[in-house]
Amino acid sequence: MTISTACIGPTILSVTGGTETSIGGAAGWTVPAKVNCIRSVKVSVACGTVHDAVLSAIPRLRIYSQDAKIEPCEILCEPVASSPVTHGNGNPVWESKDYPLNVRVKGGDVIFFYGTDYVTMTTAPWMGIDVTFSTDGGAGPQYHYKASAAVYATTVTAGAAHRDPTTYRISGKKITCAMGVVWQTTSTAAVGCIGKFSLTSTDFNIPYGIEWNQQGGGGILSVGDLEIHLSTAGKINPDEGQQLDIEIRDPCNITQTWTNGPTNIVGAFVTGVQYI
Image (cartoon, rainbow, N blue to C red):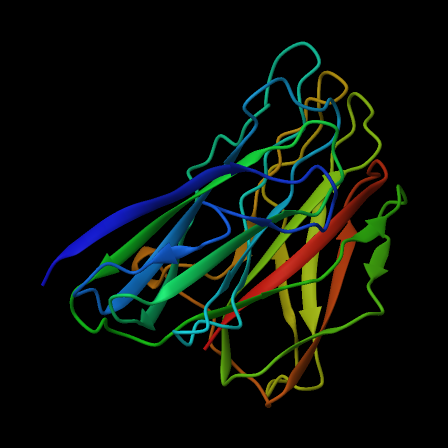
């Protein structure tokens, strides 16, 4: 058995929020000969030039193929923190996550990678993909991903719950990880973005939902100098620790909510899930 990696991109994303860009070119990536499994992907996002003060890059990756059974695969990625005005956090300081896939493929299959920024910016970030593949058939379940199609706004009121009335739907057996990002859309010095995410559904086979705290996003020294991260309930990669085990009905409609902790500045949030 051989395990190796390939790089797709990097490619500059569209500056228009919600607009997809084909990473690595419109022709897609061709699976090398004798490769039988895409094990995982790692998504790298950064800004190649001085990027927007205040605005945060909130990326999403969609993977598609007519040859291999990859879909649905919409991955919420590690964000690029807002551009600092005087110093600070213009790029993510945490390593990009390794998202397991375990997709059966064969040499010659064509895979397409589409990057999207949820936020409209004046200077676009770039995105690159590391694909880990192997010549064996892989082990463990195939993972799927779903991210909310659009962001939902938050307010400044302490303890306020912001429930998105638009649900998103998955079709599977169980949720293994929940992900969320919250960020500021209007930046003020000394104010952060602190609180908790939750996912609820009458299609969960449990009498409760999923809740997890935001990681990072505390008070800031300078306008635009906010450090934010992808926050998870359960581990994305089972090799790193405990995953969730939430059995669901098929299909499953999910409602996302963000609840402020202390008084926050005006912002927005988005969530996603990993499931099998």
